[in-house]
Length: 417
Image (cartoon, rainbow, N blue to C red; front, top):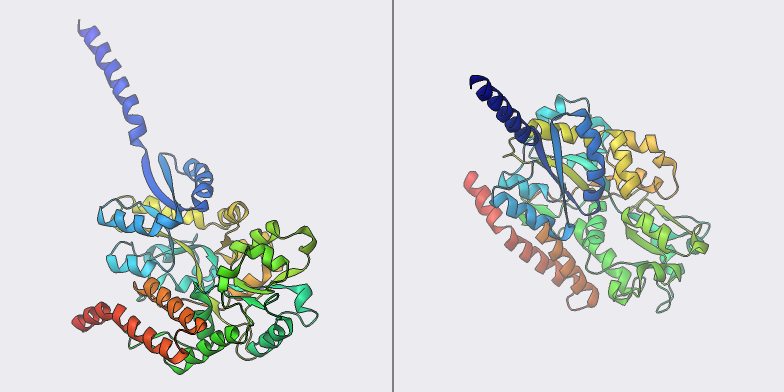
């Protein structure tokens, strides 16, 4: 009887142990956005092999829903342990207290050397002196252009040479020089950065769009439309950006690395040797001009109970070999310069311009309100282009509206002081 009981107890213990085995694994939740979600899932088996007892559950989140989903998860106490975030989202998440500070971990890690990142990109992750994310991949904007149309002079290095080239090319309505989508804020802001504008003043409490630097850049931008170098209909006049570029309806386009594969795949084979990329022109001879520091970062939720393992995952995804895998699978440009060199990207046609431009990038204001401010910039730039407001009226209204968006910020900062 005792023996039977002992055997039964052993069987039950064995069965219970088998039932617990899956639960014994440490499960790390990782949210990755868009195409990166598919690629990240393929990278996980090697991480799990190196870390027995750890499983990574990757959830692919559409970019269109990612920002709202992260905020909803924070409010509901359901944040993932690790997640991908656009670097312009970090200030908002920091203000909410949603992120784990990473300086101590980075300083103690040989896998995440600060000096191997593009300084301007790494800076987007530093807010009020604290590092909150690790760049995962990078992007910026450069000049895509038709080499056969621009001719032997090559890509322009200054605004003056750029305008000269555009005037030589443009012959509206059948042929413009440059496509500038009116719903995008990036080009007016890039031009302003190149003039040394700060966009905001008084500790980011008020707009500075009527300042001399932004005003000069804004005038240059609007003048491109008024001189009919760019179609005033913007992208609404397009049939298809790749078809219209191929037929020479425009020959310059300020865009990012997501278009490298698209241009290679969608332009006619006959044009394969007739387009290239170049760093952005500068107002004077100090080329290249500055561009935007963009991309996505890896962050850890402050409330995660698995922060140590989450950091190990960030370290793993930051390895040059993993960065190269991400690039090969998605086209995302590596955040680490070691990965660029391992893949030979600085010497490749089309990629070289990004290598050079990434040494000259600048982040947008690191405040939670930036996304709304950016949309407001686009709104008033379009109004000035279409002539519904003069440039001065547009900048006056822009400052007024941005001051309104920053009213709560002024109140909060005033209370702290």
